[in-house]
Figure 1 (tube, helix red, strand yellow):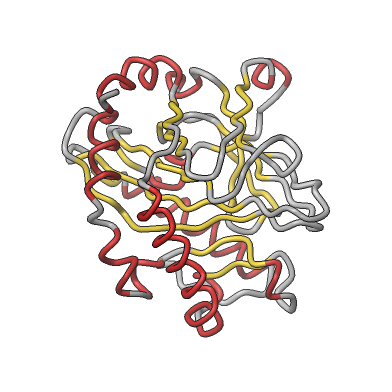
Figure 2 (cartoon, helix red, strand yellow; figure 1 turned 45 degrees about the horizontal axis):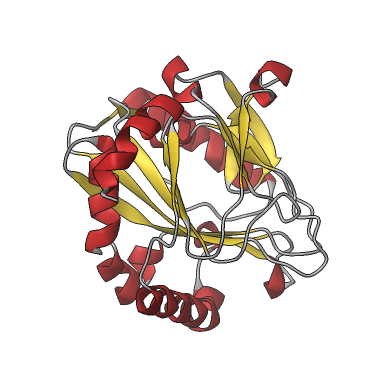
Length: 254
């Protein structure tokens, strides 16, 4: 199946699932490099590049950002052709990776991901952007799978307000039962990738498993037509800085 065959579903629903996205050797190499990064690089990172559920418990690492800026492997990984081919097929124009990210919901930590739209953070016009979100573990309802409000990318940016969730400083403030009724529950095997439009509303419940992590590796792509909305971007940065300060973190956002 060609990646272009997924575009009609992506345009209609705001997301698609591609099973077994990477060849086995590539998937193993990525996992090995992530393990190395967490072991060797993360301990020396600033607060803004590695978020913990509890800072004094390394096993509660929940999010890593700016990985391409901190490590040569992930700087080079932005050019991986399979990722860019999928992103460009769905966006419909040449696109560039904006960096690499890692997400986790560790077992025995309770933190939901609030409903949000990525473009509230990205501030791109037009919204020709998508996120490729690769499951590193089997992911289901128990350990906090993604939930997409199907078709919500067609409704524009909804009102957002501050949250208490580190890494997701803003969430959709008027999300309610009508939105929940449209949700698709996204269960993935390790190696599957979910691709979503930057304006689809999505969220995730806490990981209620006692033993299973919910790890994912992601890259964001901007189409060549994207331009930064400077006013919206300044508003977002100010909100994020306030959240970091309120949580006792040193913010590097500028």
